Length: 235
Ligand SMILES: NC(=O)c1ccc[n+]([C@@H]2O[C@H](COP(=O)([O-])OP(=O)(O)OC[C@H]3O[C@@H](n4cnc5c(N)ncnc54)[C@H](OP(=O)(O)O)[C@@H]3O)[C@@H](O)[C@H]2O)c1
Image (cartoon, rainbow, N blue to C red; front, top):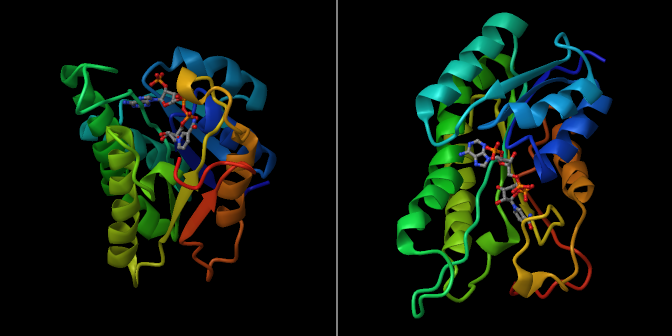
């Protein structure tokens, strides 16, 4: 126990919730954040009382909300050691047809997936620098390959670049920056077109996160690409 304070955005389901469970087992005190804090209550109750797990409503598209949360955590718990910028959203897009979500619905995904981790990094960095902390970002295998018509993949390319930009600026600060790029993961939001594809379990990705954060403080795991066996390299 006593491993530090671990903040997770998008902690209510999927990869975030799985990481919360493993981080709790590793002895971290947890801050679980999503827009709908009521969705976090059951998970928090399973992982410990308010002295071990804190639940917060926070929309990562709003810098002020993320900054206020980080400020409260450091003030009340005295540290911030790992920040997992994990919240994300996905809609199906096409540039040549009217399939998928209409363009008016694309902005939320871009704000969540690109501004979300950027705002989280900016808000958390002063605390992470004070405590020799670790920033972990959830990108995607989609952030490495071209996918026809896929704006979601483009947002994850942005996360790939964001992680590198943040790490480059963090040189000399002691802050570690890890980009985790999962392949298809069975979290309930998979489009019907990929229902039959091989999938990771959320725990598979959570173990990758915990691998990165459990290395000695002199080791910065820059990137982890993790796909289910049999996933097409271009999907
Ligand atoms: N599943 C996959 O196949 C896959 C593959 C590669 C990468 N990823 C990435 O992995 C991350 C987690 O994905 P997942 O599939 O585990 O997620 P998920 O099951 O879709 O859950 C998303 C989580 O993010 C929260 N969230 C959404 N928008 C938010 C916002 N604006 N502010 C704060 N929280 C927000 C949701 O809670 P609220 O709705 O209450 O806010 C929820 O807790 C995402 O970045 C996703 O792009 C997923």
